[in-house]
Length: 125
Image 1: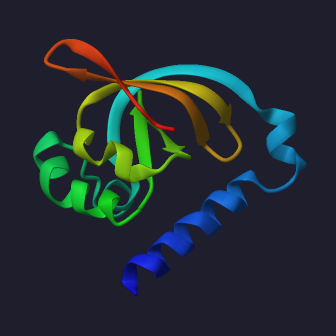
Image 2 (image 1 turned 45 degrees about the horizontal axis):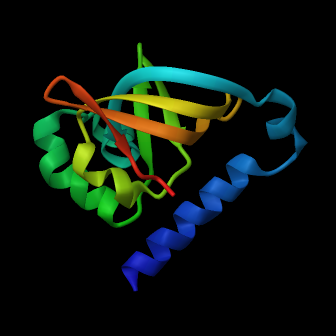
Image 3 (image 1 turned 60 degrees about the vertical axis):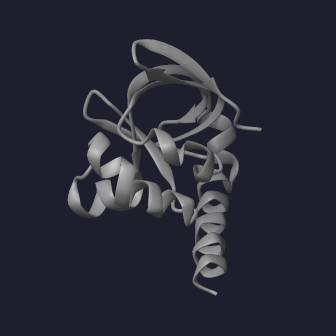
């Protein structure tokens, strides 16, 4: 029951971010590098470490709570199935995709995660 409520709230949030013509008008392609994080723990407690990612962060994202990327002090919400990124919280990543600076959202076309000094592509579709 809780999972379906969380998933519904996350889906509604994504739809709200994408709603309206302002998204289409301000969309631009981006290629950013930063640290993957779960938006729930980061926004409420500032947590983003790899140690946190292996426990609470992974649990939050497996429930469907949104993922994000911290880039030079700026946080972007990633409009993607967060369960696909749950095992990578706290790692460096490169995200390419379409961004809306007004909503701080990126729809990724590609996500690469740095694992032991080598970037690995994550299947997001």
